[in-house]
Image (cartoon, rainbow, N blue to C red; front, side, top):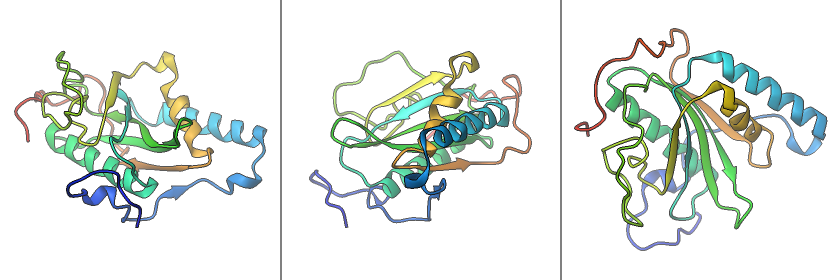
Length: 193
């Protein structure tokens, strides 16, 4: 088991146990052109899969394994779904950063337009897991959550992680009947636990 650089209990999702994670082909035998083609195809597919509401990046304040990061993402998406009081859908992928090799996540979420993305308050360093907004509700480190703008290409940005060395990704929810930006439940983010 991977050692975690911290004192105190380690959340289950950081222990690296859980279901298998989707992988995309044999990355060692793919050439640059094949990687670009797969990334482009996946980006196009994600762009047409559903109407996305937010693009996010989620980091970890301690060392975490790739499977552990994926479990944390799954739990976070389930928690957001509970707060949203309606089914949500999403895509998330793990990336190993270039500086130090720390793992973080990128993703897209839909059916969350009615939730507060950012409450406007800057939290002190090391404070995570507040229920005020999507930025502060990530329990494991720093989150960056932005409104999704299809013109900025976030669907292509997140798709590049399916062909990188750490090509782990997953989908959350059902994409059969995604709601438009006007079909959202009117609940507020604050006040839900």
